[in-house]
Image (cartoon, rainbow, N blue to C red; front, side):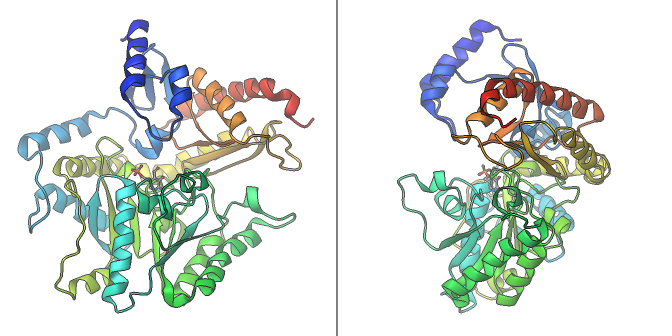
Length: 460
Ligand SMILES: Cc1ncc(COP(=O)(O)O)c(C=O)c1O
């Protein structure tokens, strides 16, 4: 186990040499990064020896939990056999073939081909290029506009960030990539009008897509892109009316549906893909993260048969690809990961045990004075922190109270992420009742401490 001296040593070197994602380096340097040194199952350990319950599965990623020996062995064996070879220039290798076959088996029936990358951002960039290439080959090159949603997160490369609907990302001083439009997100708690039911709101939010299609001209629209459940935007769970109405609209105008399943893929909602859960029929699914439970970087786009037929009807290159597209070691680890998920019946287990256990645990906080709403679907959950439960009034300076609460969680030995003042969680699929009980106890203590910190601002 590392000691205090090493913590400071790591923090000092980290501050000197490491630029972190989505981080204010000024405040990071004054506080020092936390140093995580080990993971095992549902827990991680920091350099001070503290054991922490990982309520975020790394970053919506480690569906199998941490440090599974079988995944390490799969990587080791593949590294000895063929550590790397590319998939350009008419080459392939057994792990990428086997994984592609497996993904075609578990994905919706119309999705039988995979294009690989190493991150969710890359997979969305690939999807954007594929969508536009497809329409050009079909003889409709004007169809370039991709409609997505405010607060969507599709990645940090320029195209994926442009498709994302995060105002704070768009505010950076680079020009957005052309051809994206953003409609409202299906966030009933935050956006509904007085008296509007979730079902009514879901229809209104979906019909914003039809309004946008008509505003820009249906002949110019290539696709609609959405996360089945917005994750980084704050675990925004769409009302039941939302996705069926979206499907009706994309069918009516003949535009492609891209489901970004980077968070929701591989069992998180109790189905292999959330598209199955919501009954939608995407023409493309992007995935990443949990395909390897995060043990190695791997991502991809699953592509509809009709799109592939159009690509195959033209004898020309699709000029796009990454050195690590279909990396053999990452593919071998993904295959083993999917094999274990199947062997341990983790996908049905989410439906039968995990989802109800999470919903039951969160429901215990719905009457807490700080909590405006709790919600969950599968193993995605959220707690809204508000200044006034009755009127849903938020705290001044959005994000301040969320960070106070997040820091209490962390000091109490639990990781939950703050999206402004919405606390979100995405535990590994392997949690037992013991972990749900531990989470409940920590959340109770941390909400109590947060309430004491901001008591003067909370409506009586
Ligand atoms: C829905 C969604 N899409 C895409 C991405 C980008 O993935 P990556 O960070 O691997 O580029 C993320 C990352 O969290 C995500 O949540």
